[in-house]
Length: 187
Image 1 (spheres, rainbow, N blue to C red):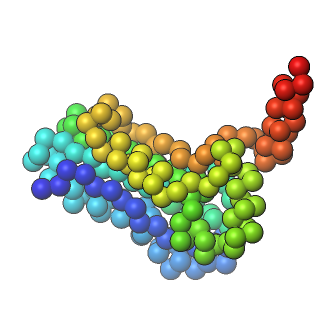
Image 2 (image 1 turned 180 degrees about the vertical axis):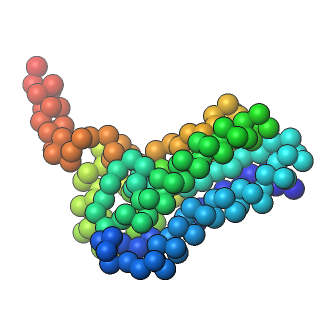
């Protein structure tokens, strides 16, 4: 049987909305959103037979938390995923099935390294309050926790793992943070 399902599939197309075809939209929605339904539907009978289970999804900060030009299809699919997480959690809660997700921010993966060169990655890192880009292990540890019995009372939630990058209203505030620290130290 199946105890835990981790959905970590993603398709990303970058560019303006008008640049993409209906087929492009269908690809992104099929991989990022429709597969949530398909995998869940396949796992739920196993969970019922075993008396519970965990559905875990990798969403994104892009869409549900923050907007970025050129990511409309991807962002919409991840926003839909978050809505799915909440609704499925409500439907399955009384069957001891928890449904949760994580929203990675800037995580140093091979895919991220394809998007930007070393200088670009350093530039991105400047806007992360923690001061560094996350590692895949940061995501894995959170997923592992959500899969445990210790997380049995958490359902319908997404956890943002981004080193604080979505906290400031504007990147300008990060530059101001150093000034605030200087003022505090001068007393």
